[in-house]
Image (cartoon, rainbow, N blue to C red):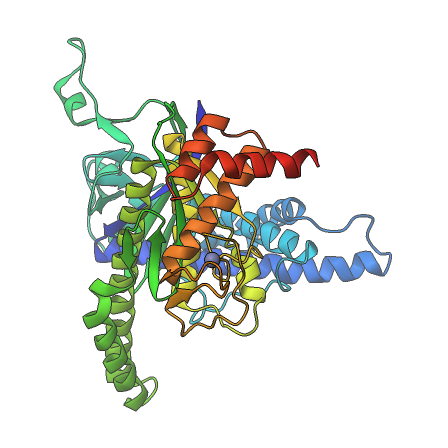
Amino acid sequence: MATLSRSHKIRLTPTPEQEEYFRRAAGVRRFVYNWGLQTWQEQYAQYKAGQRNKAPTANSLKKDFNAIRHQQFPFTEEVTKCVIEGAFDDLGKAFSHFFLKRAKYPKWKKKQKSRDSFYLSNDKFDFGDHWVQVPKLGDFVVGQRELHGEPITKRGNRKKALGKVNLSENFRYVTEHTPTEQEKPRHTRKYILSPHVKILGATIGREADWWFISIQVELELDFSPVTGSAVGIDLGFIRLATLSDGKEFENQKPLRHLLQQQRFLNKQLARREKGSKNWHKTKLKVARLHYRITCIREDSLHKISYELAETYGFMGMEDLNGAGMMRNHKRALSAVDASLGKLARYIQTKATRHGTIVQRVGRFFPSTKMCHKCGHLWHDITEKDRVYVCQNPECRWSGDRDWNAAITILIEALRLAWLSERISDEFTVSAVAGTGLDGDAKLSLWRQRKTG
Ligand SMILES: [Zn+2]
């Protein structure tokens, strides 16, 4: 059994009244976060000056807030209290990241700049066929209608019905409930959570002027280890992935047309008067196109990683950690960088699920410079050299540079996995032989180094 965290993001189609609730909840979340940040600063200054015994924490601030909430901020009561809990959790996280020097000092949440979103805790929402029940939403909508003088009958039922938000697809981890004979017909439309799934919480947020719910779950999985062949993967900027067995995955091919459109829209946006009606229109178009591009990219990354995890039993891969890449000042973190890191992560998660071994190769391993045949290093190889030519006069092997890198990565990964006893001698010998080298010779060489 292994536990995995996953999330499922679904687009919501709220009614205008429900959207108003979302906007207010996001507003409350911003307000509470900023209140917490300001109070934290005040209390911390008092603590430093010796006027308080303890430094403030997210929890103590939440208590302070809840004590005055009813009196001073009654508007925060029209939305679910999850919003407030979520805001203090976020503030707590922001401060702990700051203290661990992982992030800058927490900033104010501004209406225009920060993303509209709020949190729902795990026990506060319910699912059915294409709907999710959002806490307090029904009360809010009914309240608004009464405010406008609409008479409400059967309040309980109305609240329940109006609190359901339509989902554009069903939540992945629920199944239709089969009612027992004793149960009434209304139970036929009930949905229950799949076994081995635990809901951790959810976030509702706005993106490209659409609303989404992202539900975090924890899965318990049984996996049977697959026995597949070994492969080395070279991740790159020109070609997304090159495999040691010759397979290739191109980068951004399906996106070419959309990327052109994106450039066009960006130019158009620059020409518009900032803040004007047309500027807002174009801005929304840009945001929606951006969202589409992200979806297509994500989709192809998921497909590639799925195929890899399904096909192979052992994968050798470079260690591309995001933080390390960002520290490289020569290259700003582009969308391609981000998708490479993502691909590496997706491969890892899917491989874990399938029981495939993933062996990372250190970031400083010279996979591109090394000849896979003789191990000679070509130090002067540049980005432009698409063909690897071995500089060793006795070898002179030449071929596709990324394919060469994929093989050197595979050999190094096999060595590391063999050293840490993750794979057997037989597997290692046959996998090395698959690269065209003498597996027995390699293994005896590694053995000499290990003992000597
Ligand atoms: Zn060579």
